[in-house]
Image (spheres, rainbow, N blue to C red):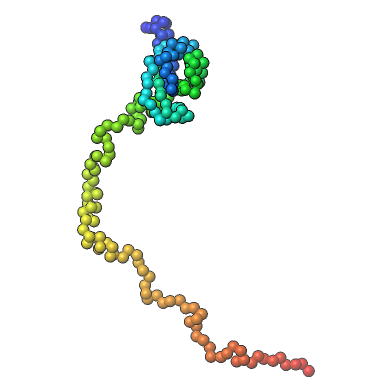
Length: 199
């Protein structure tokens, strides 16, 4: 059975953050960064990792070309990313606009850096291009290709009527123009009956 000290040691939770600093080398202010993070019980802080210059970065959209440094910090006391960002800016003398703090296990961060291996973003490896791969064998496509390979089958299919036309035997409907015309004039042909005057 575990004694209380071992149990307490294993139950202590740590809080991991990824700190991104733009256009300022944190190696020059590393001791100031450590003392700033000691406010939340700093357990470990990785050395700054410099990334290649980027034309723009999603975390620093207003900076243009960015020189980016990454550090991973493990803290004993709970805090949020805004508190860390504020204390780093205040105590290390780095502008707050140049600091971005995110929890290390944030889903977007895992996807972006492909730490879980599930991201669609991955480095190009020679031979992975889809255009270089041969087509898969498909028997149905081959049968269809054989059926339409000769022009005779195409002409035969085009000559078949697919629409039923109305029969020519159906008589046309009659209009008033087709009715027989009379020989009498409508005016003056019939004499109106005159009323007889009463006496």
